[in-house]
Image 1 (tube, rainbow over the protein chains, first blue to last red):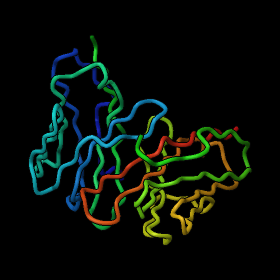
Image 2: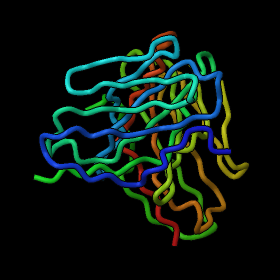
Image 3: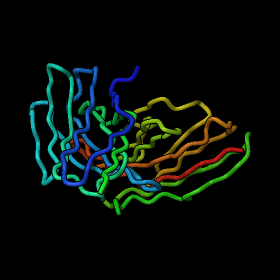
Image 4: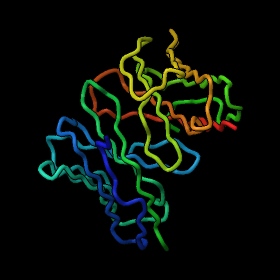
Length: 112
Length: 114
């Protein structure tokens, strides 16, 4: 039962443009949604999170949007930079349960 | 650097063997989580310990076990290894309570079973 899904295995974007990564979920009990970035041979690094009671959270070049009615969230990166090339994981958790449920990841490539 | 350390970085072993993966959480974090990432898959939650006690279990096989010691470091024991156990194993830690659920991940241990 895949509760968190990232349907795009890969995404290629021109440097300086906007990158939009998408994530869908099925469990309406999730309290928080998080985005992690992962480089090869490293562990995932936390990027940004959003509470289920919010619809937007912004941190520098990164903005996460949450659409609860559609059970959909997206991560926007503006402007995209070559260093953003990595695998991005969407994750969700139920407060109290504390375990993160991860999507399969999307490989983002920023082209110069 | 997340502050979470894992050893060893790489491990190559044979089927049927037993290995131990070690994790030290960030200073002050009481919770330790173990995740498995198989080829091209997302991370799958295995087990959580909080201050020495098992708190939550995920899709962890009976051949696998874990513990958290008084100094808060944790070990994941994998026995009767099979080819399909080859994966990246990540440890994460988090603040004691509250927050947005942010977990800090170590660099992982790559296990190869031949």
